[in-house]
Length: 514
View 1: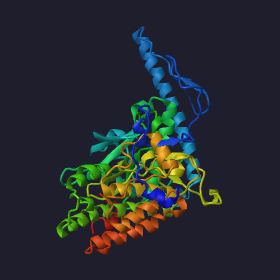
View 2 (view 1 turned 90 degrees about the vertical axis):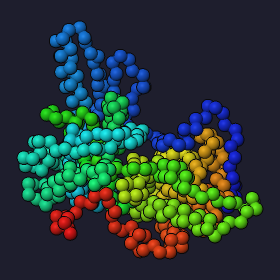
View 3 (view 1 turned 90 degrees about the horizontal axis):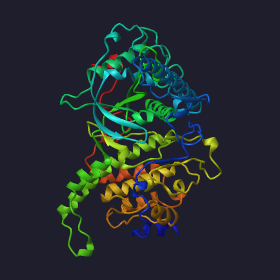
View 4 (view 1 turned 180 degrees about the vertical axis):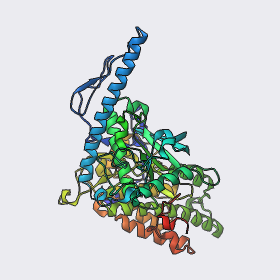
């Protein structure tokens, strides 16, 4: 099918058996598994669950002996020691993986001192509130309060602990330079910690921050624990290395980094965690619970009614609100692409609004840094199939080489959803998506997209041929132009993305009280 035909094709549900799970079109998938995964001999376990450790040895977790009190105590001590041993090996494994990631990353290596504005915290200092969401490995909860431990007041190392790098992997992940008592870097970390403790809520009582940590069932499996921790550490490292008003900000890491998992005095039994800006509404909620309710019915020409100037103004006003959000989203992707970072999982559930109402891109778990030396003659990269099928570019779903244009496809599908307030391929199973969308090039109907320039942008963006798609910079330019047309009184400050808008910005001491 030709590309122009593909853009105009309207899909109608057909075929597909009951065995096709619709959730497959909405759930994030990643094949093959993380490179940190070590293959085990089967998934079946007997009464004694076994998992392969970092050295390839099998660690057997003994069953509890309840025959006597002494036996139980000995078993508890034995299990505790074994758990600490497993955690130590997991921490070492994560350190190795993160060290390799740093060595192969231009983004992480280029920002060696940026992490000074991230606080070092103990998990027990966080008062955990309502669960906000969950992913394949982790949960996200609201932080209702942050209370400093008593022994931190007299801690000469400023709460940095025995590890020399709190940011990611303790002694291995070292973004910082000088952390001796009294150094500027040490004061900055203390400053970040103090700000979190003293300003964890806004004046109206809204919580500013959230904590992301691995689920309990993930921590129960050493193999999953290692994979999940590595992903979480790397996500935190990337977030700490990025600075954009529409990308979520990381605010805190565990005291001692990943080595806190095996601290004999005070082990972090809840695993590695990230303190992030708290988001109050996902884009999915905004589309279907807010914009959908406020939406003015757009009268189609086929009904024979005239559209009044008032209704046209209302329609343009509603579209302007949505285009501003899309414009900010595109700015975040332009920023990532400028650093050769491919997001790979763009969807409404991975975008949210902070307490100020600013859209934020979050969950960088599938972000892939592209190295120009590894691209083929066509400018593509041999990467794994990753993302959410409903928004996934055909070349990704079909296990073909791809590049940054895969994000443009996903963005175009999401832009169509924001303009039409309709979920794409809502009645489709995965097999239907594979046949009609990925292979045949079918796309959603453009009947509800009245703006011609937006229609052209969307159709070019989800082109079946990646070479025919615009760059994110070009998308950004079109959205900016269309937004300004619909909101002519917009100031330059409102459409500038080179300044960080933050829920609470950590500034240098001389700037803090200006």
